[in-house]
Amino acid sequence: MQVLSKTAGALLRGSQRSFSTGRIASEAAKRGLVLGMLSNKLVGADSASLDAAQQQKLLAQAAALGFTGEAGKAQTVLSDDLQQHIALVGLGSANSAGVEAQDTTVSEIVRTAVANGVRQLRAHKVTSVSVGPMPHAQAAGEGARLALYKFDAFKSGAAGEKSADVAVSSLDAAAEWDAGHVCAEAQNLARDLTNTPANFLTPTAFAERVQQELGGLDNVQVRVHGPEWAEQQRMGGLVMVAKGSSQPLRFVEIEYRGASSDGVGLGMVGKGVTFDTGGYSLKPGRHMDAMKGDMGGGAAVVAAMRALAQLRVPLNVVAVVPLCENMISGGAAKVSDVYTARSGQTIEVMNTDAEGRLILADALHYVADVHKPAALVDVATLTGAMVVALGELYTGVFTPSPRLWKSIERASVVADEPAWRMPLHDAWDTMLASPIADLSNIGNRSEAGACTAAAFLRQAVHGPRTGRESAVLRDQNNDERVPRWAHLDIAGPMEAAATTGYHAKGMSGRPTRLLIALAQELARADAA
Image 1: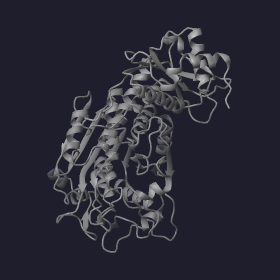
Image 2: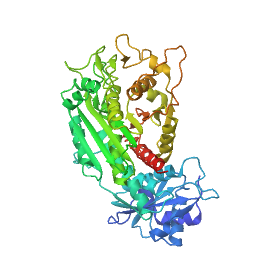
Image 3: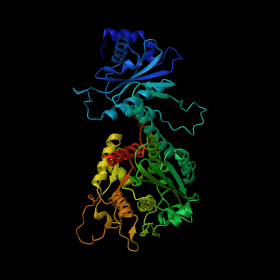
Image 4: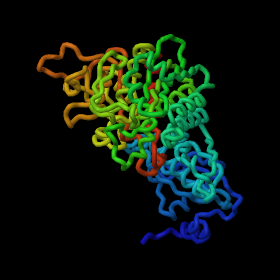
């Protein structure tokens, strides 16, 4: 049995209604406050005009409820006048240098803690929340906005199922908080796009949304191309996949000029299959509803581009999203069909459910050929094999460039979006052999599915590996040819299984913040 101190017990008895029901005595009080708690002390309470006596009373309430400020956790208490809900959020304990002593990074603790605090306050029906000073203001801004996300656009509201808007603001560090707000709202845009049903988000509707979100931003140009343009560009893969649907393909091209130089520092390609049935290699019915999110790579790329423009990141960036549906019809691709990619390679289609790599290969070749970026990344919900390998936590990264990998790794740490480098090897190339074409679109053995998909995409950027006909097969993990290329397989992180911290169950919007951080990292490297 827990024994309470006399002071804590008196507080508990004196505010019995508040602790038992969690409701403020005055229905008119709708203001919420989030304060950090580090080593059993309140952080930045002075900025909320709380004197020492008031702070001690809040800490006593927390102690009475058994809250010790554990990192990432939150506990709601009440102000002296019962007019304000206050969420105390745990920042853990500090070491002698005043830095969080646990293994988790400070930013992730703050992001999670603030999110849990804001989420608790929303449950108390507050209409506004002020967040006190935090050790990482940008992470606080991200956590606050990400925690409030709920996709209820298709709720009628008749049963009170729509969430009321909650305004959040910071009591400190406005610039960093605002940057966090931008990054979080970018991820929320990606969440919205991937959660939207495919009958509402066709390739045409997706392209129109891009124009709506980015068309009016400074230094941004958006172009939308159609089927005729794709034919002229010799994009055989995109054209073939799109033939199975009555919805016409779209190819979205976004240019952001953030630097004074002419060169493109980063190119991004996002997979844009707005619904994927698998084609004639039909997917099982279970979980097919998630295939409305098969354009998650495209959504993340578009959302990141909006944030880069809003943050005025000093880097020239180009992003493209090939958009189509993968459906079944009399015009759909058949297993064993052969087409010619933009690269000039002929491809035998041995599985119509491996369509993402077909449209990505054409788009990658286009960006490398036309825009000539220094670095080029593609982002795709590409393979179930990656889910088996890394689950929903890590993004799998394939790149032959140690230099680009280091940039991605640093960006993943900044964004707290874990990434893991995967291998490239000559062996994967040999598994793509076709008896009648230059390549097969899948490996010829039931193994290394994510690896052979990456090998397929690498050839679109750097071409086939010549001079490798010998029996000695080598890895491909130390190649700095420009463009330095990386493939991000997000089949696992595309969806969150549960609502925890700043994560909301459903489509995650990842790796939007990682892409933003990557562009910022490359911009810093250019300036150095």
